[in-house]
Amino acid sequence: MNKNLNKIQYLQRQIRKYLSSKNNTQNKLFNRPQPNKSQNNYLLLNQTNEKTSKTKEITNNNQKTENNSLRQNNITEKIISPNEKETETQDDIDKQKLNQEDDSSMNSEIKYVENIRIENAVYTGEILNGKRHGKGIQIWDDGAKYDGQWENDKSNGYGTFYHTDGDVYQGYWKNNRANGKGVYLSSDGGRYEGYWIDDVQNGFGTEKWNDGSSYIGNYDMGKKEGYGEYEWSNKNKYRGYWKDNKLSGKGVYYYADGKKFIGEYNNNMKEGRGKYFWADGKTYFGGFSQDKKEGIGKYIWNDGRIYLGFWKSNKQNGLGRYTNKSEDKDKFGIWVDGKRTDWIDEELLKDKNNQFYNEYQQIINFDYNFNVDDLEEENIVKDLQN
Image (cartoon, rainbow, N blue to C red; front, top):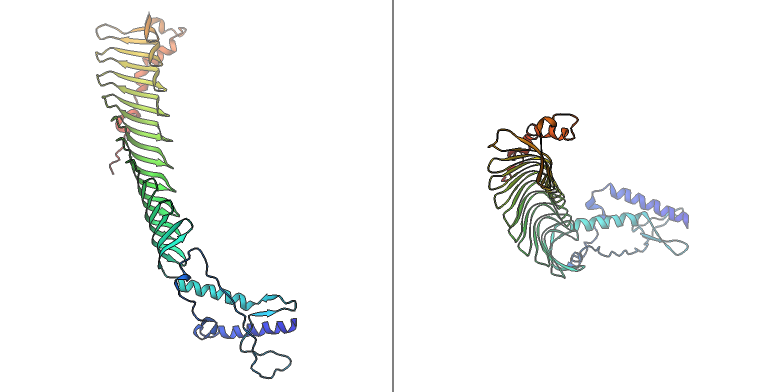
């Protein structure tokens, strides 16, 4: 039996070799009847049509055989082995491949379907090869809705998504996620217009909230990062740098009552060097820590008086120089918690053995060291109009 089986397989391959040398239109393997084109062939998305294989009967042309050779016009696709089990031949593999190719060729055009059930949603629109592809609308059972472009069974291209809570996203998609430029409208009146990556704000964008506050600038994976401008509902405004959604780096803060701060921030607080201007003309130039004047700094009253010295928690604390235009010379003294406790002769402070010598040197060199261009307003703010 095995010997005959080998002969049959040999003849099958010889016949296929002969047929393959002909034009495909003459090859009967390529001229099978077309599958039924009823709607059921493509309405069930994400499923493949069931295929059935039939076993052709072995026929004989009643011609004489020589040396037990088998010559047949119709070649078997299934051969029963001695143990009564079906053995798949090379013909089966070839014909299954042809079936798949023919089906793919037949469905490789966009079709339109209506109200097709897909898990917990209903789809109406275009499909290609059994997958959502082209323009289509999908409505989920909970009321969510997507209306837009599809590619390879996923939202790709331009489309609008309606959330169940009333929020709406309109823009570009990639693999079921917001990617590219888009607008997000919140049901409470908020609005974001800008760039996205995988459903989070990323790149340049503008955002407005229902209380009147707004932001224009850069985002990094959903957080304000880099340069940006924020205006609060009370009309305070910040123009400067951000990190992890917080003021961080150099910036300019404009207060609604006329005050202004130019300097360095960390974790939403003034930290490092800064310049503070009051609406009535008072100014401070110097160090800050955790939003308070700290270290060495110069405070100028609106009548021209000046304190240049050390600070702690917003109060003069340590050695300081006091200047009054009505007096002939500056005075040095010691301050504790904002109050002067004593005056010190400047000649004593020039002695290197004096305990305040290092502080004295910082005071007399302050104007030279602090006057740096990188804390000028025009060197910090940027034009975001375009």
